[in-house]
Image (cartoon, rainbow, N blue to C red; front, side):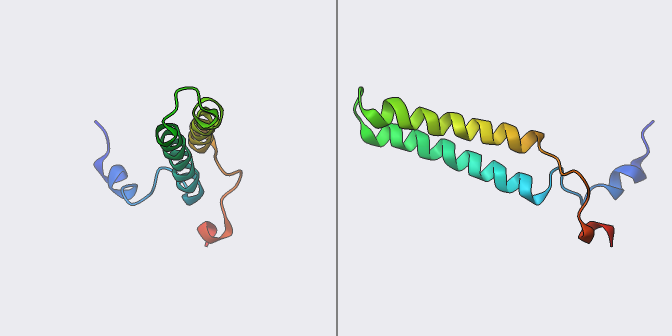
Length: 81
């Protein structure tokens, strides 16, 4: 049976660091901007909808993957105090 006191000790901690959340937000913003650029151009064969928007969207997904996998090498000095 799991120890319930162990779960209560970790309830206030975040899964990722602050930098990971910043990177996640940047990735989501890139995806939103890419889809908005694709929608706003409105042309089926336009330069932005064919070349720029897909690169923004792929960059956003790559940024999210990087944010999920990135972990700091060692804890910061503020956490050691």
